[in-house]
Amino acid sequence: MTTAGTETVLAPPRAKTAALSATVRRKQGFQHGGWFVAPFLALFVLFVVWPLVRGVYLSFTDANIAGDSANFVGLDNYREALQDPQMWDALSHSAYFTLLVVPCITVLAFLLAMLAHHIEHAKWLWRLCFFAPFLLPSTVAGNLWQWLFNPGTGMINHVFGIETPWLTDKSYAMFAIVITTLWWTVGFSFLLYLAALQGIPAHLYEAAKLDGANAWHRMIHITMPMLRNITGLVIALQILASLQVFDQAVVMMDFSPGPEESTRTFVQFTLEEGFTSYRVGYASAISIIFFVIIAAVALARMWLLRNREEGGR
Image (cartoon, rainbow, N blue to C red; front, side, top):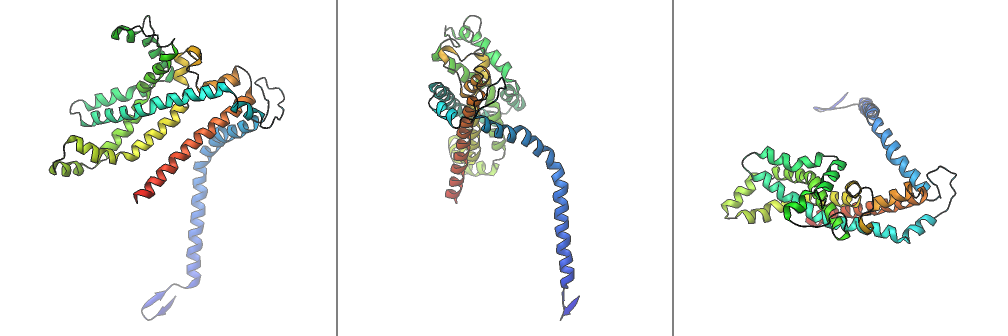
């Protein structure tokens, strides 16, 4: 220790010792924390990284499901996929489904959240009713609505007095799947909106009321701007989920591509190529193409969000 006037200065050896102790503690913390992270990393590498790397490798081969020796074919699978009209049809079906579902489910989830947030009596019952379908397995939801849309015994046609061949006409089959998806999955987006609504400060509405703003003005100028980030999140999640539609479409169509192949989605087409046509290499190439599309959508969402935040500043 050295003293200059009334100021005490830490000697250099002690300062080095303190810095060394802090470094040791950080290393020990990293080592202990690493043991907690290790199981997740192991499972992530085993079930995500390795299948992805294996899929990329298989996409450059003519591997089949029988396990015969695979030959390297370069970019042939990718060239064939990009020239395959069936692949583009399947992609267009998934894109069409996404265009129908995303706006509807965003608006519906917002309206249901507003209703559940402002209703006075039995709030828990309304929230349960809106969220409960999301807890059902996809096979249960698909089979339930397959029965409801059945022209002979289903409830839809009998209640509305119509004779629409929902599941056997290509003009209606995709709409039936969209309706099923809305009923089944809106609960998740509803929950996000409801949580965001509960986080809006009440004093904003009280100040708006004092300024003479009616309910419509409060929703337009307070509620919707405050929910802008949640709306962006809901849209992004729904786009990614809708592009990967598979379960309800396959179950409702009895594992067929639908009337005139009008409901064959991209994921279903990939599955058929890999496990029906036994072309694992070609199916892997299609999967990689789809992975690139999904990644591009996610990156575009991140880019738009970052630009909007920078613009807001």
